Image 1 (spheres, helix red, strand yellow):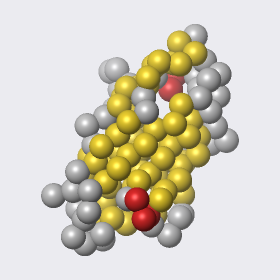
Image 2 (spheres, rainbow, N blue to C red):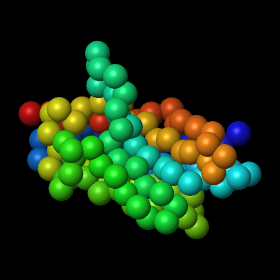
Image 3 (spheres, helix red, strand yellow):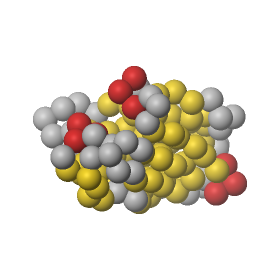
Image 4 (tube, rainbow, N blue to C red):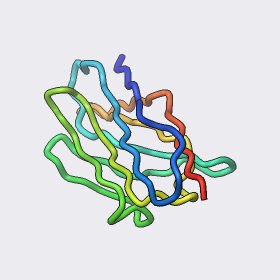
Length: 116
């Protein structure tokens, strides 16, 4: 069982920045992909960004140029630097880890609120 613990959410004004962190416990088969998803009230959970162990990244179009995902493999930690935040970025942000055998694990979520 892999545990993921997020931190760094909070309340910020539009145009501001936040940095989310997610620490994963050791995985028997290793974690390949780590990513950030978000779910706004009344909406489905969506991918924000993810990164492979080798550093290949993917972003949803709405955050390109504003958010940066990075990873420290030695610390089993993934980060999401969020800049130029907009009210529409308000959501609960979840960390996800996918092991090399395809098993997925989720964190408990951290709330981000962007005020206008």
